[in-house]
Amino acid sequence: MAEQIKTNRPYPIQVKLRDGRSAAIRVMEPHDLDKIVEFAKELPADDLLFLRTDITDRNVVKQWIDNIKNGHTITLLAEIDGELAAYASVHLDQARWTRHIGEIRVITLPRYRGTGLGRRLVAEVFDLARSLGLKKITAQMTTDQTAARAAFEHLGFQVEAMLSDWVEDRRGRARDLLIMTHDVAGFSDRIVA
Ligand SMILES: CC(C)(COP(=O)(O)OP(=O)(O)OC[C@H]1O[C@@H](n2cnc3c(N)ncnc32)[C@H](O)[C@@H]1OP(=O)(O)O)[C@@H](O)C(=O)NCCC(=O)NCCS
Image (cartoon, rainbow, N blue to C red; front, side, top):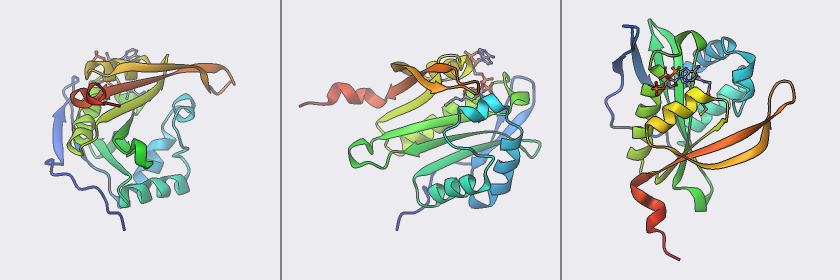
């Protein structure tokens, strides 16, 4: 039976934001279900559309928690004055031939954006992903999610692929999807046939 991923990183940690406030970063636990559902209700419709799952749905969040319990996902939460302001997850690929790959997903509540929280959280979850021994770390976003692209580029992620018209927005308009990756310690260069 798989188990929740344990990290030896010293959470919770406090991080200072550009506006002088501080955020507490900690690992998401099963009892955070209601917090996530409340958080999701505050997200704009456009952001919800580009999430892989509808986290306003309690049952979907329960599945997320099951993924945490069985070690398929680990999520960091950032709280400001006790309110959930952002989260970032690493999803471990379950297929045998792609089990060295982890996908990062991140989102900040709009009222907390632009203060450095997203970048800090992505950096934390990226370190966590590397500490799990993942060799290739990926993130997916539409070409117009410029803040996300900036946050990942800052950590050395590069565009690996652009899939044209891959996703549809709320109005049914097609958008291009960017797949950004970070090749930990030159993993791809070491592959031999
Ligand atoms: C991506 C996201 C998490 C960034 O969160 P944040 O808390 O605003 O992050 P930061 O304040 O650290 O900003 C991150 C970078 O984006 C830039 N940025 C912030 N808002 C921006 C905007 N509206 N347009 C362009 N760049 C922007 C910042 O300048 C920063 O880059 P820099 O460090 O090089 O200056 C947030 O915008 C978000 O939740 N977006 C919707 C979900 C999403 O796109 N997720 C990514 C899919 S994995």
